[in-house]
Length: 260
Image (cartoon, rainbow, N blue to C red):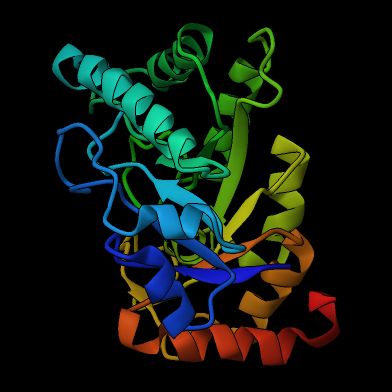
């Protein structure tokens, strides 16, 4: 089990070394923008290192929506992000599940996700991440994730294109109990490829996507550890930067033999 963090995209290897991370995740440009991805300064160093790389897609990407002004550029940006992430040796691109408009049938969103995997090339896998809030979200509630996977199961050649990223803060904020979250997700997707290991500033079922350093939020630390153990996947903490080194060290200490 390899453990790391979401770091600033400039000189990611230096940032990884500073917090003793074996895994790094970063953006390729502005996470709130629509511009083409930009390869960060120092990216060659991390590409050639023993540190595993994941890229997080911009938050603006929403391939589920029926709004053409958002969905079409989202697909284009997703393709650009995949190509750029592959060029630096990233293992996967992490993308939020997105949402539909208030009056839309959720089936519209599921079908729009299906079209993504039917129409774009995936040089590396897309990991769909569960999200914290929004009644119209595709991946907030596990029942919606189940329907999404059911629809996607009909896409030919899907193996190697799709994975799942479980965020502990998002699940907690979405009102999904962590005690059996891994079993329930694996029953749906068959896999957990990455864990975003975050405490939550806000209460259970709050819908608030606000991460906290491990042990400082509202999630029982033992629940966080149990999720990581059960998932058996690489771990990325997306917690406030000043506490990331302590979060990584805490995980290594408390997971013990599970790191073997």
